[in-house]
Image (cartoon, rainbow, N blue to C red; front, side, top):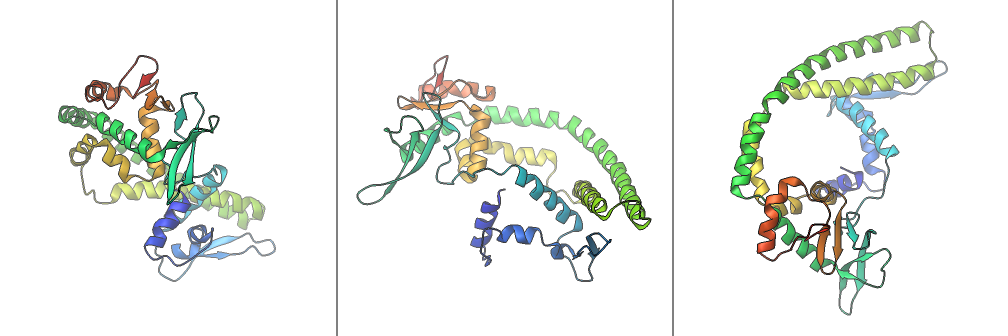
Length: 304
């Protein structure tokens, strides 16, 4: 989840801090993990030591978050707005992307989508969202589809569970190895065999790797509220209402669903959605959509 959404949710729960870096400052504060950051001094490198106060998160969680923050900086991009879930995934009939915004009418503002080239044509956002809602309702699975998916998924669980046990064994060995590396790194520092800067770089790298392994292993030891079969039985019937799943998600989750169904081939033109690709699992539902006149299909491109 991007930080702007974390901030939005936290603020709704009573979060008082303000500023663009409020969430990041908290995520980078090692005190919450029961650690104290000791700055570098002369030849001694920066270090993190255990504090005497009670932590509210684990050491592993803290280092995992630092790794995620480092990766997010390398992938910084503009976040889509919640009001425009189709912006960035919907294209004009000409193949260019659609932009979106608000335009002022006589008494209120109206949401619109517009091609980045055909800028003289505004498409009413409310109408577009409603039409897409009809497409999702039409693509939703029928009861016999859901039953087939449930039985197939249960059969497919056997091999993953076997691999899960093997992966746990591999993680235990990897955790032992990383602890050895940290011990040897400390030893080399004490013997003046490495520079403080080298120690700092490798210490953080090893701690992040250790945090990921510990988190994976701790997850295996936590009590399972639902077995795999229970989860399948409880969640897969939700596919009978694809639109409801879509509505519950944030904008990134909505766009992930759209790309999963249509890849990057969802277009709008001549008053209809068009696509040259739809996920094969939805093929059976296309006829139902056509019969209800919600949309219709051609060979290339497909039209909804």
